[in-house]
Image (cartoon, rainbow, N blue to C red):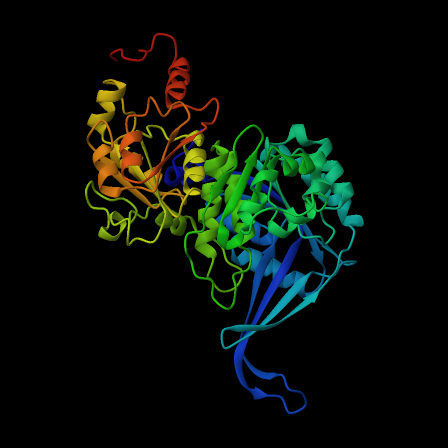
Length: 498
């Protein structure tokens, strides 16, 4: 299980991913306005440039390539000028088009966006749903040949006919002969239950459509409205996980038997010409993380971070691995002991509800990520105190920590739910609590109010204590035991000298 977000990028490099789905030619016509037309009160735009980019499943493949993977795109276009432009755009991104069939009976789906003075004025769509004809047999045969050779499969359905019932049934019949990781991104994920997907990725509106018979949903915020419907969404889609994207509100990840995990947007301002394809970026990164063995919560974090890097970019955007590495490596959240901002230490003036939790966080795992994301939901800012290496040794024994303090701080800072990370040297965070005066202090459900020594201090300072139920079957101690159980016969065990 890989829970190190920056380190996870090394694990996904070279993974081979089959992308099956609809491709779109995204064309951007840019210019400047020169007033209103004489014949009608609409803007007259003088074109200055045009750009052809890869959209839909083609954009998923482009993002996979940008993240260091080896995508194989399986699709069909028309045998027309738009199809040829799309192939040229794919080749310009370094992608092979050998598995993209050209069908004379089809029209290549094209979306033309007219942008003037930084504002999108109009989108012209060409192409409609067209069931596969002769090209369907070729795609099925190619899928049979490719499935045993890839590490993951993405089904990218934009409703234009490539992912029709026949091809879905063909893929479902061969599900066990392919890789275990299969992710579906579709406006209608309930049509793909036969694929037994590792994950599906609906957006908010798509999730509402799935839940249309549930009646009015509670809560004003979209995340709050849908947080309690994880089991229903899992049942309706037949997937192991549902990664529900919420645009500027981040995402919600649902998995059977586990609390939902919330990721948070990273504060990028969206310009007037909104980004196209951030959902494709999310899908690509989520799939790679799952295929690399990441915990579901960590996979959602990586996907959210990747999508965040493209928000605000013009056109149909991709996330480059170096760009994502820089975003994850941002150390602005990491504060030395005693260096939290003055405004944060002033309960009367900070104007935000501050949540504080603490721990060793040695070998960060999915249970940690789940608890931290739920802790953030209790307020506006989440501050995490981290025991120093000496403190961990006193608490856990001379063989701990497994990972050093700088590494533990780095992986925590990469989580979108965490706002500040601060180390402390004492065995207890009482000094840090006294300085911060948090509104909410969160600890795991293995404590009680009677056994939590910091509880009286928090309440005396005006805060409340929240005991968070922990995720079953996830603990650093268990992970270490499993690692030792994997050692070869004759190798030294825990505490032994090599």
